[in-house]
Image 1 (cartoon, rainbow, N blue to C red):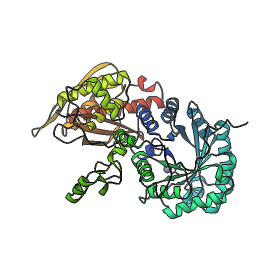
Image 2 (cartoon, rainbow, N blue to C red):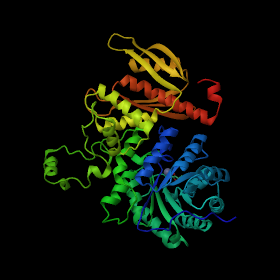
Image 3 (cartoon, rainbow, N blue to C red):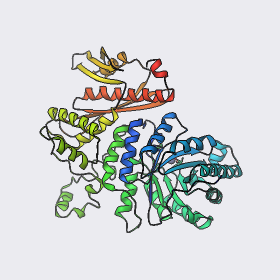
Length: 526
Ligand code: KIV
Ligand code: ZN
C-alpha cells in the first residue's frame, strides 16, 4: 500500500515549530483533567495563538480522549492535530481514526529505547525494539502522511543504539523524530550533543525535523529545550504553564519568549502570536485548578511588577532599565477600570475582543447578561473579572445539574446550614443540610440531592482581584474510580461559587461516565 501524500511542509531550518502537549502530557499530571468542552475551547485558543501542532490526546486511552481528539480534528484548520499511540496496531489505528477529520493530522507513535525501559517495562531485546519501530512507523505511514516517532527515555539510551533506532524510524517514513528527556535527567550541553550527533551520523537526518520534549524534574526543561534547538532541533514540545507529568514539561510561554527576546543567541522564528499567551495561561489554570505561582516567568502575577523604589524610579525613567520585554507583548495589559453597570453591549464586545475572546451571538448574550449581574453586585469590573466570567460560562455549559437557589446560615453559633435547590435533568430538587462550616454544609446538601461516591480531592479558592467585593474563583476536583473531574466557578459570593464549582465537577464526571459507558448513567441515575 502506498502512503498518502504528506501534508507536512518542507523543513524550514529558520523556524522552530511549537508543539503543544497541554492536553496530552499536561493532562497526565495528577488532577489536571479537562472536560470535553474545555478541551475544544483550549484548542481554539492554541490555534489562534499560532501553535503549529496540537497534541490533543491519547485516543486509545479512553473514549473521552478519542472523542476529544476527533472533535478537535473537526474544528481546527490551521494547526496540525496530533494524537499519541504506542507501538501497537490497535493504538495506531485508533489514533488514525481520531485524527482522520483533521485538515492536517499527525500520528505520534513512541516506544522506549533505554536499557532500563527495555529490560523492565518492555522486556524486549534491542533488536526487537528496532523491529517494533519499523513495523509501527510503517503501519502509521500507511494510514497518514505525517508521522512523528519518539524514543521514550532517549536521554538514558546508549547513543549508538539511539542512532540505530532513529535510522529505523526515518527509513520507515517518520517525518519528525522526537528525543524526549522523559525523566528530566539531561543537562543542556549533553542534550545539545545528542542532537548534533544524530544529525551528523544518521542517514536521512537532513530530511526530518528533530524535536525536543523535556521534563522539568531538575528544573531544566526550558534550558534543555533551548539547548536542543542549539543542537539542531526545530520542533519544541511544551505545555502551557509547564503542565505535565510529575514536575511538568517545558513551559510553552518561556520557550517562546526566550526565543523571541534572545533572537541574538538563537536566531529562529516561531509562529506564536505572543499577545495570546496570558489568556491561554489563565484559561489552563482555571480549567485545571492549578494556580500559576506569583513569580512564574512570563505569566506570573508578579512577572512585570516592580516593587522596590530603585526599580520603580528606573522604570519611570526608561522601561528598558528593568524590563526585557513588555507585559503587552505577552498580553498582560494593565488592569483597566473601564467597565461598569452603564457599559453597553458594544463596549462589552470590544472589551472581550481586546481580551482575546470572539464569542458567537448566543454566548455573547449570555456573557453580557452575567456581566450586568456582576456589575450590579460589584462596583468595579476589572479585566480579570471579565475573563473569569467568560471562562466560567464555558465550563458551566450544558450539564445535567444546575444550581438554582442557595441560602446559607453561617457564623460563630453553628450549626452552619445550607438550603439548596438544584435543577436535575429539568426537575427542581431541594435539600437542607448542616456541616462543619458553610462550605461543608453546601456540599452535604449537594450530596443529599445527588447521591454519589466521588471523593473531594481539592477545594481551592482565590480572589480574582483585590477588594472585599472581589469575585472568588473556586476550583473543585473530584475522584471516582480513578477518574478525575474538575469544576470551576467565579462569583462575588464564595459559597455560590463553591456550589457551582462542585456541580460543574459532578456534571463533568457524569459526562465522562456517559462517554465511557453510553446509556448506563441515565439508566442508573447517579
Ligand atoms: O516524556 C515522554 O517520553 C513522552 C513520550 C510519550 C513522548 O511523553
Ligand atoms: Zn512527556
